[in-house]
Image 1: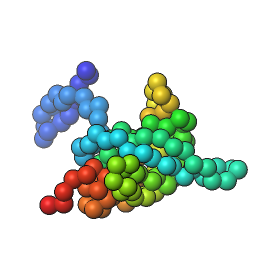
Image 2 (image 1 turned 180 degrees about the vertical axis):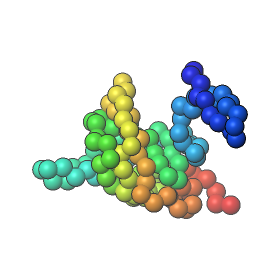
Image 3 (image 1 turned 135 degrees about the vertical axis):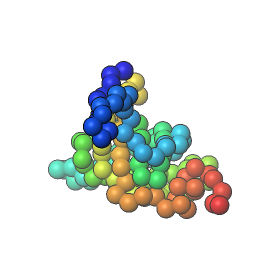
Image 4 (image 1 turned 90 degrees about the horizontal axis):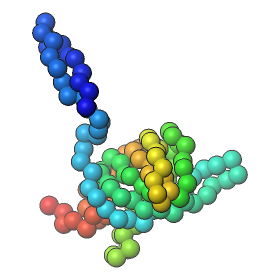
Length: 125
């Protein structure tokens, strides 16, 4: 792990390298995902799985790669209770995985408490 040099007042200090830029914790999940993707030939649907979720973003496993900064409409569904919600999001990053592509997305607006708790089957406090 590399180190970074920072200056506090007039004194330099060493800091650990930061590799994860997320501010909020992601919660592991297994949700069905339908992504509406706009392409030159029209709108297409891509089906996949959400592997972790926060109010501001989601990690998806999809069978195909999506363009970075592309806006998609994500529908997240719980199969056990039928709860679902839709939210537009932007593709932030991607990487190949054994079952397709891991795609990190940021929602344009944070999920509401009702949406987040409903997707994760949590009781509202």
